[in-house]
Amino acid sequence: MRVGDKGRLVILSGPSGVGKDTLIDAWKALDPRVVRVIAYTTRDPRPGERNGIDYHFVSEEDFLRRIEADEFLEHKQVHGKRYATPLRDMEELLAADKIAVLKIDVQGALSVMALRPDAITVFIEPPSVEELERRIRGRAADSAEGIETRLANARAELALAGRYQHRIVNHDVGRAVDELVRITEEAK
Image (cartoon, rainbow, N blue to C red):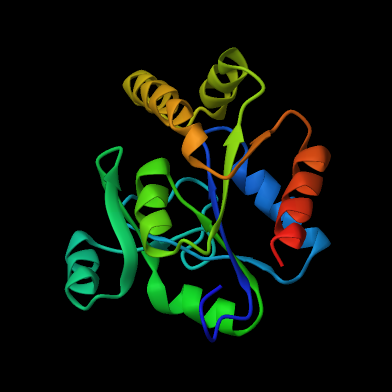
């Protein structure tokens, strides 16, 4: 843990459709110290997503301005859109003794791991690739081409799961959350 940090930093990754948001929501319901750091993105909101709650939705120009101002811990391009982790938000949560959760893709996670070796790293895996494909197709949030891109990216991300300290199969939300609680408690 870095000097001045009171909380814990958790990097949570896994392929699209694996249930990361569901796990974070269930974890937050058990422990009010758990707070997801809200990422910035240049993509359009999906139906039901709210600015400042799900993501900070910003223009390409605003995103680039924030890069120039060194406001991000890390930033990258995924599925043709930009995403970033706000540095100040994360630092404020840690200083307030929170469990700051970064829900980020593998590319961003590897960058943060190099910058923050104190982070607890957790990769969420699907019960099977077939189940993951069913979940992605069932969301009806993407075109056929978008689904194929997400599935290809999922295979690439699953191949890098061994780079994380912990791996949890999200077959049962309750069990997966219990694992997250145990992992973060043991990291004290």
